[in-house]
Length: 188
Image (cartoon, rainbow, N blue to C red):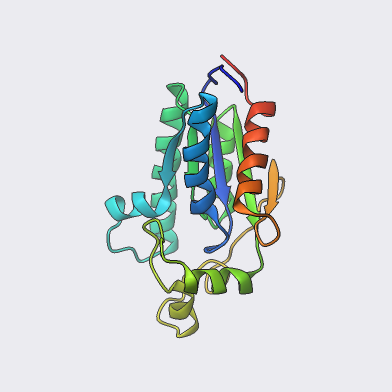
């Protein structure tokens, strides 16, 4: 279909845990190469295993973690590597840091009701490195830092793309994201 490469860009896929961020990110990683578009995936859950293997999810730790995530994304994009960021980034300031520093940046918000996210999280088998049963831990007060329950989740104010992952299939979310990339990011 398309046989051009794109200069460095970054897409931050955000939403509550269970909204489908990792599923979308991995689906994009499988589909973009078919269009001759390469992208490096920065998974917050995978990065957290290396950076903070016993996370506390305190505000201070989150600030450190998301500053490191943004630093890596910015460096990759500066070297013409496309980046997909799979991370809740519960505070706007984390996502906005990338927005300020990366010329070709987009925020994709996976909108999904908390109740649906909770149901999905209980059923999912492949967590893509995410901790399991986080909502159960939140409701039992074993973990009071879960975004959307014990910790705030600040929805994007002006995301470039909003996908209702409760109503759209993963295939439709992938298709809309690919179309966004093709329509909005500068070609080399």
